[in-house]
Length: 405
Image 1 (tube, rainbow, N blue to C red):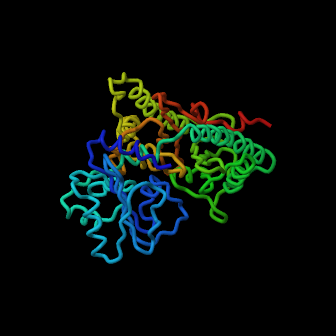
Image 2 (cartoon, one colour):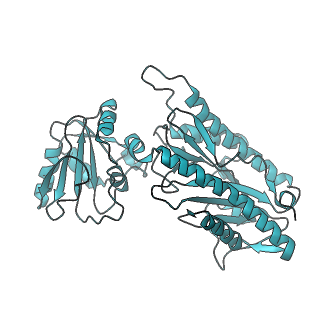
């Protein structure tokens, strides 16, 4: 639910005159989330909602959709003609100098840049400086409450146990008929989710051999491969409870279909695990730092977490084989709207905030196979750092040894 007092407190802390939220036909999902507008609400005209640092919010809505923003406080002004819309925006911004919007200069962070260039030009025409709302979005869309944290922990129990189910299934099929297809393992995991009340936006990744070297490989009927004894397997899976406002758990483990893991797989895994742990330690160190009188400790930004992991892999000589960011925000979508752990695709300047969750999942991808090790990290309101989904993987799982017949 939209909390006006908290938003205005954050605006004052950031020394902003206000926050101008804008949307047209769902293009700015972040603004809709902050204002708690239902995802299925059909709004066909442009609307603006201005939250000043002090005082009453103001709305600008189209004449044929006058109730578009009835769910949030403030006075409403209606427009019909385009000239009235532009004059209305000017009226909203009267007396303002610095205003937050879903914008990042040069589109350096497309996860936040949801307002089109033309609207930015319009606002600037009234002499207003536009500041990115990235950290505001985190505070009021990406931060979890206690109910969501509890739902994540429950989902994490079943995403972690899915590996026992999947690896045991692989072992059983190998022993009984000599092989199992990637899609069969995929379906086994989906059945496990369904049995425990979990849902997912996409089926899990099950990649054998060279397929594990493709970070976004997606097995499908007719294009998948058989898994046999002596094969290396990567499984990346994610799910959440089938409940309103539930949030995801997202994990990746690797295994070898045999009793002894060959050195080539274990060596690469250990590099990746060290990179994963370096990123976790970076987060732990930052949030263990003493807080000052205003309750602030060390400021940690997403790019720094990425770099901690990336340094380990680059020093091992595999920098070019680590071809994605270290982690992504986790929320009601697998890839949420908080800070990502990224200094590759973007230079993530957003702060890592308490009550947010994100993945840490470095990887090394080679033509023959690829290794990724993924955990989820949640920072609670007391700045305690939690790694969820059970104990992080410490070695490649020898599937036929651990899951004996």
